[in-house]
Every structure is written in C-alpha cells, then in structure tokens.
Image (cartoon, rainbow, N blue to C red; front, side):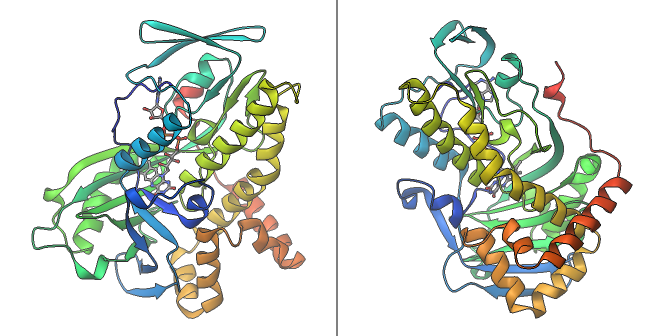
Length: 366
Ligand SMILES: Cc1cc2nc3c(=O)[nH]c(=O)nc-3n(C[C@H](O)[C@H](O)[C@H](O)COP(=O)(O)OP(=O)(O)OC[C@H]3O[C@@H](n4cnc5c(N)ncnc54)[C@H](O)[C@@H]3O)c2cc1C
C-alpha cells in the first residue's frame, strides 16, 4: 500500500459508517466507533423538523483519521507492507509488469489497484479514463463550549431542501459535531454561506469551526471503465459513491474486497484476467447506483414533499433504515412493482433529458 499522506491523516468526510459497510468488514470497528446512531432528525429547509428512531443502530460515527489508521493497521497485521509519504507520480505498464513511481522510489508488481480517491492520479497515469461527474461538499467541526449536547447523543441531523442536489448534515462524534453541506458542483461558491446558515440553524456559531474542508463527491457514469489489463480502480477513484446519500465508505470497502478476491484468483493463476472484478461491480453495485441516481433526480424535484412523506409513512422510514443497514437496496425498491419501476425509469429519463450534463472531474482529462 502506497499513500501520499502520513497516518493518522484526516480525510474530508462525515465519517458515518453505515451498518451495511460495517457488516462487510472481517473485524469489529468498535475501537474507533465513537457513536452508534439509531435516530435521525430530519428538517426541511432549516425549519420544522421531526425525529425518527430505528430499533437498533443503523450507523457508526467515526473520525476518518482514526478509522483509516485502524484499517491500515489491520492490513499491515494481515501482511501488507504500507509505505507512507509516497505520492504516486508515475505508472508504467509493460505487459504483465507494472512499475509505480512514488516519491523517489519505484515499486514493481504484477498488478495495481488505484484506490487513491476522488483526486488521485493513479488510474489516469495507468491510462484509464474514469468518467465521473463532480458534486461537492464542505464540512467542519464544532466542539460545543457548554458540553456535549444531549439531543445529539445517538441521533444525526439531515436537512433537506436547502441545498440543490444535496443536503446538509450534523454528525455527532465523541466530543464534537461534524456539520456539512454537499450538493451540485454549481453551488461551490455558495457552500460556505450555506454551511454557516445551517450551523446557525443547529444552534452553533460558525466562527467556532475547526478543520473546515471541501472535497469532491465523485459519481461514476454507467459503463465507465473499472479495469485495464492488470489495473483495477476502486472506491472514489472509480466514482462508486452513492449519488443519493453521498455515502462512499460502503462501496470503497465492497470494491476493495472484490478487488482482493479477484487479484488472489488472478495472481494464483486460477483466473486468467481480472475481468471478474468488472463483472462483480456491474452485477452488484452498478444497478444500485443507476437506481440511486434516478431516485436522486426524483427526490430533488421536491425534497420537502419527500421529507413530509417519510414523516407520515413508517414504511418509508423502514426503507431508509434498510438502505443503511443493507437489508434492502435501491434496486429492491423497483423490484417491488413493475409499474413503480416503469414510473421511476420514465420520470428519471425525462428529468435527465431536461437537465444540463454535470461537469466531469478535472482529473479525468488526459
Ligand atoms: C465532505 C464529505 C463527507 C462524506 N461523508 C461520508 C460519510 O459520512 N459516510 C460515507 O460512507 N461516505 C462519506 N463520504 C464519501 C467518502 O468519504 C468516500 O467515498 C470514501 O472516503 C472513499 O474511499 P476511498 O478509499 O476510495 O478514497 P479516500 O478515502 O479518499 O482515500 C484515498 C487515499 O489515497 C491517497 N492518495 C491520494 N492521492 C495519492 C497519490 N498521488 N499517491 C498516493 N496516495 C494518494 C489519499 O491520501 C488517501 O489516503 C463523504 C465525502 C465527503 C467529501
């Protein structure tokens, strides 16, 4: 593993590890999980709000500097060599051999996994043109002076309707709160003002922010490449982020696991190519991303109406919980009724045709 950062390092992220991601990991993240979350306070355009509880935790709130260092330690104890402060700056492919230049060193191997996130260059340097659209988020932390607010002990806040194409959030951590806004790339210049407004709505002073950071939310376009020869692309580098919720940890872990399995088969000679990785993603992840993108388009026609619907409908709340825990998927929603699936497909196609194509991530241009 090569990483340009020195660990523990932070990464702009709410740090919400939904139960569906927790379930994929072969070990417990309890040492770095700061708060189990079973409640959600949903507000509409920073106005009226309501609280819903699930019977058990649906998400675990972490700090990425702690979570990612913990994951790297687990990988090292499983036998991986981890080189830090090693920024990848060149990739050369010669037949079955790959040479990666990072810092002043060169590393040679039989395969490469480009897992370097939304801004990483590895896939591009290996000649893979990943087609991802760019949404954007800004987040920061607040440590309340008057002690940890009791209303945010096991509840996170979601505010809908105030951010085009996205939402605002409050994620509780051990001793502080993470507050953020994310949405369409075009709202970039207004993100700070929107974040300040949301922060005041939650009752905090935006002047007390620390660790303010912005970062892209990369969403792949269907059919965008996932492999080229012996190079695989995973997580944000492949744009596997859920366009509806902005959740990316689940797909990063899922794709990492799939990459590991297929690499093992490839390197041990039982599979001749890495095509199985693409097949895994196209079968298990991509259909859900396509449906999530459709639901995202429908949701943002009238977010306030959806929020009111969830308030009244226990089934809708159960669906949200099921998506977080992995007990249900976006495609399951369409499988429930052929008529509903037809309606979603039709409405989403009409909306997409009427909307301008979002810009591609700058790192894709070659
Ligand atoms: C503001 C914000 C809030 C979010 N909140 C959530 C959330 O609450 N829950 C959730 O599930 N998802 C969330 N996401 C999405 C989530 O953060 C990402 O989808 C997830 O981190 C992707 O994991 P990854 O391993 O693919 O990439 P990253 O986590 O971005 O890891 C990439 C790694 O590559 C390294 N790297 C980059 N360039 C190089 C280079 N040249 N050479 C070597 N190494 C390099 C980086 O240092 C980094 O360690 C959020 C995203 C944003 C922007």
